Image 1 (cartoon, rainbow, N blue to C red):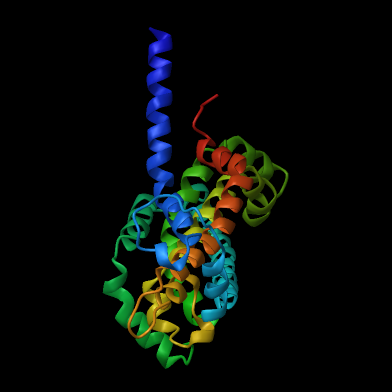
Image 2: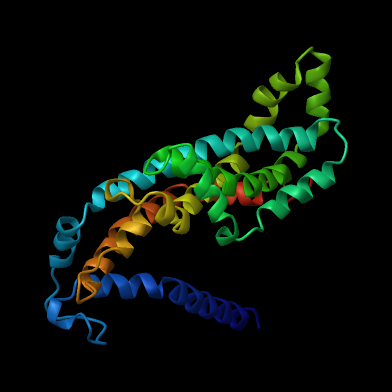
Length: 272
């Protein structure tokens, strides 16, 4: 019975992995096809080549798009984690009133659709003269990322024993010293997981990047790839090649830090 259940589990897991990886596999196989086979439904080609990768780099400044995305996503992640950590610590560990209401308001703020707030944010960024700049995208990205980051970090901070905080108070530590030397290091797995989620969300964001940064030299990867088109045709080969090149770094980062991510997701799940 156990062998049958184990076999069923592995079959289901294999199907799940295939369904998850299918879009990326299809994009990769399409990117190595010759131009004449790009619209064929055949999975494999007998003449694979890298012509589309060369074209993707020469047609548009893809490397510049990647750098813009790295810079904007990195700045967003650093600023969001710093402020979200302080806010989550204050809400969960300090003796303040209406903690539930504050967290509920934070969660409600993250539910606003981007299309509903794009107009006021665009007007603010324009009036400040921050269009076509890193700052002009980092500000709305932080607005989107902070509520989710605060909510996630609050769950990690709540799992840390309060006895550690009481001991620090007896030793004369201030609330900020307690946060910096005790709470934040203990919540490091959760902080790291939250940082990865914020980075990926900023990396994949499209609407604000399309609206605020209209200058080609300031575009991010999602917007840059969407503009891989000519007057009469859509260069699907270049698009698939560019998609593979910008997806692989994110996959490598996730695989490299998968243990930390899993540790963060499971942190505090087992109560001692």
